[in-house]
Amino acid sequence: MILQTVRLSKNFAGLVALSNVDLTVAQGEIFGIAGPNGAGKSTLFNVIAGTFPPSTGEIFFAGHNITRLKSHQICHLGLGRTFQIPATFPTLSVYDNLRVGAVFGSGSVRGLTNHRAVAEQIRKTLSFLDLTACQDQPATNLDIYSMKLVMLGSILCTDCQVIMLDEPLAGLSILEIRSFLDLIRRINQEMGITVIIIEHLLDMLIEISQRMMILHNGKIIFLGEPEAVRETEEVINVYLGTEE
Ligand SMILES: Nc1ncnc2c1ncn2[C@@H]1O[C@H](COP(=O)(O)OP(=O)(O)O)[C@@H](O)[C@H]1O
Ligand SMILES: [Mg+2]
Image (cartoon, rainbow, N blue to C red; front, top):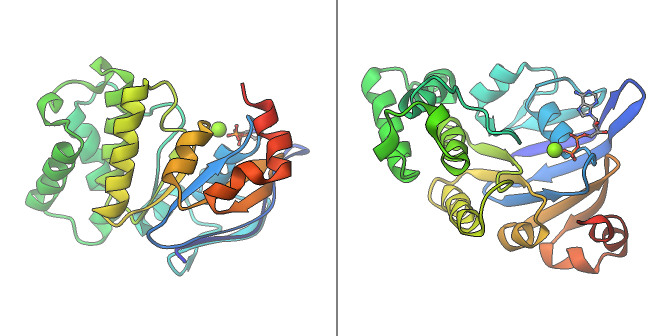
């Protein structure tokens, strides 16, 4: 197992956003997370990634207790994440957005220090994401799909072992969704990166995940094989029943 949370809870001024979440993610798997709006999905990523500390509970990553570490320390250990709203450096070029990841990520800690190694990491990632042709454009010029690729590229350049994706398919066309799912599979299979993905589109999540979790009001209401999701009564009631 590469990531584990133990009785993880987060309160915001009386609001219980996460309640005693026990989660284990195995090395190499694609783990899917779904749940209605406000279920606590993004909060789970924020707490794991060190954006803010949990109220109670513990988080372990790759043999380290990361519960009280800062987000940059967690990134250096090899845990990367993307945001629900594409976050790029708009005035920087596509190339420099990836360079930020390469220079500040875990690669820099694990010896990716010389210019040639950094340049090679960026070149490989640009080529993998099919971004080479637009590497000199400012990120702000890009369409939403390419912007998502740049955010992903920057994380991949950190040399992460686990990547957490927060609703990466939101706002994409069906063709773009297909390509993005393909990329996620290749990141998992070819790069050996463990993927944890939050996704609102349940069909897509069931298709891509090896195991799934459904959150509702900060609690786990389903954990298991994707095929079983649709047969779980609580899920049908609270999630499928409220899906737009
Ligand atoms: N930084 C924050 N401050 C206060 N409340 C928050 C904060 N982040 C999330 N919440 C609240 O926590 C609950 C869970 O939110 P969130 O994790 O964003 O849900 P999801 O991603 O599943 O839609 C919501 O009620 C939300 O309003
Ligand atoms: Mg969210």
